[in-house]
Length: 166
Image 1 (cartoon, rainbow, N blue to C red):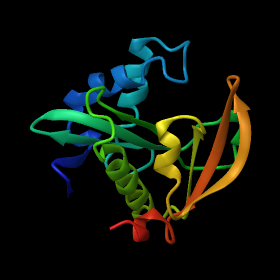
Image 2 (cartoon, rainbow, N blue to C red):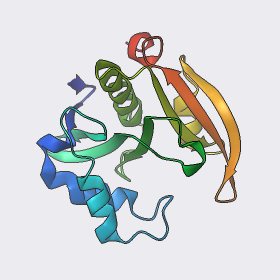
Image 3 (cartoon, rainbow, N blue to C red):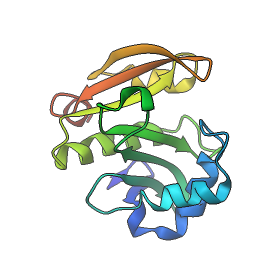
């Protein structure tokens, strides 16, 4: 898929990027994970057509960002699945449309796999919050996670971003 000045690919098609994606995730939300266990976590999400799966944005062979659709993210919400997790960008590429395109791609891919609802959580103070204040995403719950206020959000894929974002 081509979007802006980059392409979005399935991580299973570019396994050489696993270590880079793992480096972006390492320490975020999972302070007890080592880099090695983070690499294995990312590797386990490099699937072509089943959840969990990860997508990467790439321009000129340089990875710009990643997003994962995963079966579980929060122990507090065991019955909710799947989740949009690990939305990240290259440190030098914030606010260039990479995350928006990745999220749109992930929602569409989930819908194509038959997923009707997708969940995510985000803090309400960061740049990520504005990414999800889009048509289709709704607040599901407000909570405290690791001493930080977070919002659990949900999108109905058949009605949400997959159809409302050009």
